[in-house]
Image (cartoon, rainbow, N blue to C red):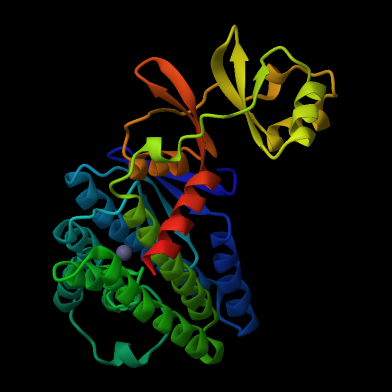
Length: 359
Ligand SMILES: [Zn+2]
């Protein structure tokens, strides 16, 4: 993850900040200096933005720690200029759990809002401050309180996959199948995403980005939920390829190219004394050619740490494993007996067939 800066971790969850975040800070500095804002005030603006993003991190921890309570790990938390993202390993399928996880983020901002409001009130609330729109030592807490209220309300808009959209999906899932709930929440989310883009074009470029993010995110979640629901009830056996090309681990890449040109396979099983020890893909062969030559041995570029699956393993679980581990193919065993391989493309075809049949 070279494009992100590691900030630290809490309860095993690492926090990263994306490099584009520096553009946001630069933008504040430049636009402030252009409009003649004093350097001290620019300092307060930067502090204000950093404080908001600290609250965004706390918001994401609200999601992540609630998910942890249900046994769901969080890969990491990434801060982007348009907001934060807690990358949960999966979204809870139990609607009540999803509801709690989704609500926990905005709830954090509401708690911060109340705490800051109390501090502002105790310090002596001055109405004139509200009309003064620039941030400095006397107004920063008041603005930070309002920002947290805004964050909570904005995130609760039913724009799936934003928090409010997840709340909506969870509530719908209590009454109907999850796929249908996702399709309804997703369509509303896409409509809101498009609306954000339109409103953003006139008022705020960041809203345009958020709108696009929501539109694509909703689409991806609809597809994902529909696909995994189709895989339910099937096992690895249903997509197992018993015929597959093999190549010896010590063969030169020229041999692999020969096989590549000879058929339609894009992946080969790498064998050593008839035992499978890994896989090699078309991309890996090409990389080997670029870094070496046709004489380079297969084992130098092959993936010798393949994903191994059991033939009776649920297909949904296998598919998830392949995508989280970023493996295009996996080797399939029954106990210790090697049976063949499966690949993502094959599973996609399986999904397409089932979708076409269900119409
Ligand atoms: Zn959230």
